[in-house]
Amino acid sequence: MIKPALDFIFPHNWTVDVLEKRPLIAPARQFIYPKQAEEVERGALELLIKPAEADAFLATCALGFADPTAPTDVGSCPDPDWLCAVSGGYAYLINVLDPQQWRMIPYRPVLGVRALPVQQLLLFIGHHSILAWGRDGQAWETPRLSWEGIEITSIADDTLNGRGWDLMTDRNTSFSIDLQTGERIDVTG
Image (tube, rainbow, N blue to C red; front, side):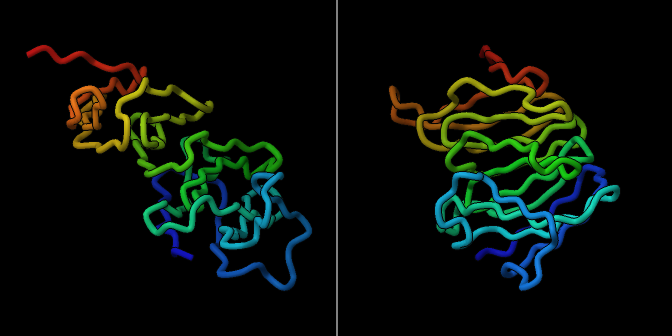
């Protein structure tokens, strides 16, 4: 298993320990994400989450892909009571005060996660588009930006610039996204 690179750029009301394996004596509260996963323990990301105002619980996040290029990470969210866990490209957002309240980002896999503290957004990068998660949940999702892979080249003010592969021209093309709305910005020459 890849050791997560912990990113706590947003303020948060919890602590987390990334466990090498499931503890012999687990806390009373245990949650598996997603609930319907088969063989969830094989390669799963095991987290001992300790909310500031609730009992600790064990979160088992099923592994998406065992490929080292699929990210595994743990970090804070724009909402201080939520945690983001990525396990082999499967991204889970968990409410630490009510762990039965959670979301899974629909990209299979998430290829990257980028925190934007100024805009109070977490960006989830997929093969074709980008999804933004804010304090109140999903903020926006871009239209298709690429047929296979997105590269973010820069972020300035409220504009994200990047490149993606275009099927019709068989080459990389540039795009710009408004970080407030997720809409593509037409750049005229």
